[in-house]
Image (cartoon, rainbow, N blue to C red):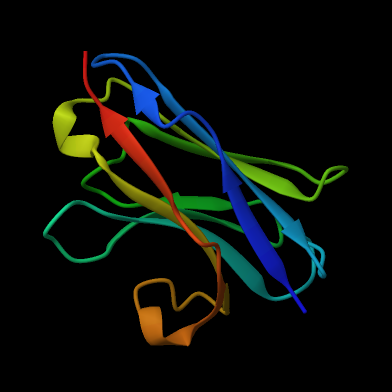
Length: 124
């Protein structure tokens, strides 16, 4: 049974960098052909895909957030980390990490495992 767990601060000040870590158990993040995504849901809005890091270590980010987004991994800890810079109150959302087989990162129905999500509020 694969489990994902997000961790990180729940409150971030505007202009700072949001940093969240997803710890994966029950399966390696380097196993072919899994893609590990960050997805968020702002209050009252739908899901928004942020980016992924693939089993190979390659990354791809949403064009709307590109330039502010970085996803990295620590294979020794089986974790991957999201950094979102220059945050504003519009970045307030529930942030989730999730796994998909193959690069079907936009099709949320294809994700097979999700973290429970963590609320991040951007406010001074």
